[in-house]
Image 1 (tube, helix red, strand yellow):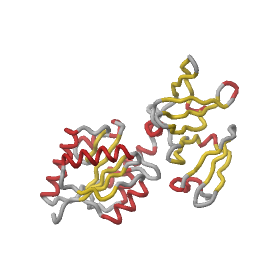
Image 2 (spheres, helix red, strand yellow):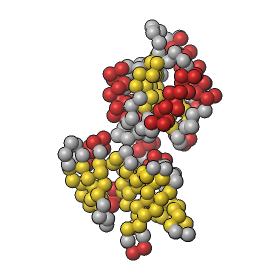
Image 3 (spheres, rainbow, N blue to C red):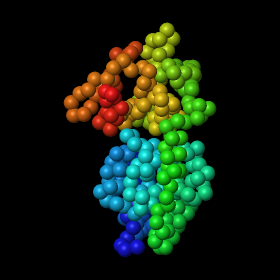
Image 4 (cartoon, helix red, strand yellow):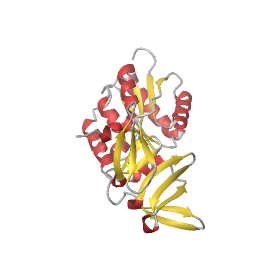
Length: 260
């Protein structure tokens, strides 16, 4: 291989990109990090523009998942998936067909991945042909098993712990270290509570046919939407059926609401 290897780190959480960059600097000093995209669309664009040797792709990113990015980039790029959820570390990963790292990334596990990648590059082995497997993983991401989909949330409401049916939730919003749960309480009245589970972790457990991320910090129940109004600069706002607040739709997710 000519020249130092290059890598791209794609993750929508800046702190996690920074941590992985530092870990890679320690485990593989000659590896050059050439880009740190914040979402799937940026990852695809920068992979096409920079042609990195390796792409570290977060499985769950806004706009396009890491699996979908992997399906579209140059097949010569070696792909490593980074996930916070062990249930995406399938037998195919463990068999070495695809490389993966589970957050928080452990130095020993990263060292194994780095050793494998360095050996492939030393031998000038091409990236593995995994199109069929990527299709399988993408399908699983879109259709989680009914038994694993989240049905209830536990939230502290005053002195009590409330069990909130997922179907009653209108939207979820990231609020610093917490997630705001906006749901319809007794008699259908709007209610809110804060929980500690990160929005990104919740999204991975929700049924994608019912809940959709529409902004970096907002996930909405599609059944709760009254209408979507297009705005300036490729943005939009969601009006809910039983709530007065309007939710932002960022450019990344605007395609979800295009008229057929």
